[in-house]
Length: 158
Image 1 (tube, one colour):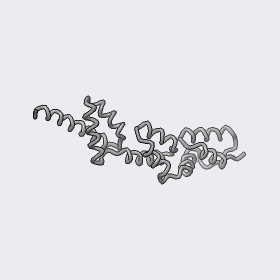
Image 2 (spheres, helix red, strand yellow):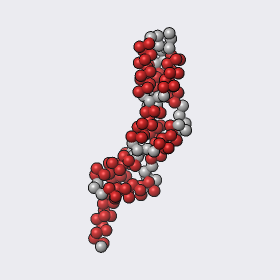
Image 3 (tube, helix red, strand yellow):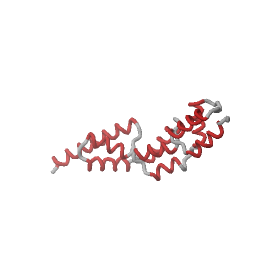
Image 4 (spheres, one colour):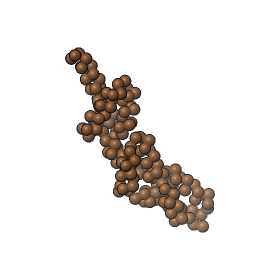
């Protein structure tokens, strides 16, 4: 009996070591970490128990991942629609995403203005083609259409 328990324990230690190394490089969601661990280790039940243990010990947190991710992406000039899609893709629950995107400390109109200023400068727009280009850029960055329209109305010079 003891000889059978040790290989299982060694496997659990190996999975945990891999997980902690991955978490040492950056925050991961549970889904991301599960995918990476399952690619390296065959026993998915063991991976799940290690993930449960890491969450219980506070080493793995989708909430913390979302907080960091939203902060990082918003500073790079991305809007809430795109960030929400990226969080969903990474396995963050909608409630957690909403807590940081909708109720968080972010002024999305200000972030839009900063992103537009970095890309286009402060010049006003004198033609429809340039205005449309700016609008497409901001929509692709994930800003809501209402904010994009407000910005375009403000910079339009015709």
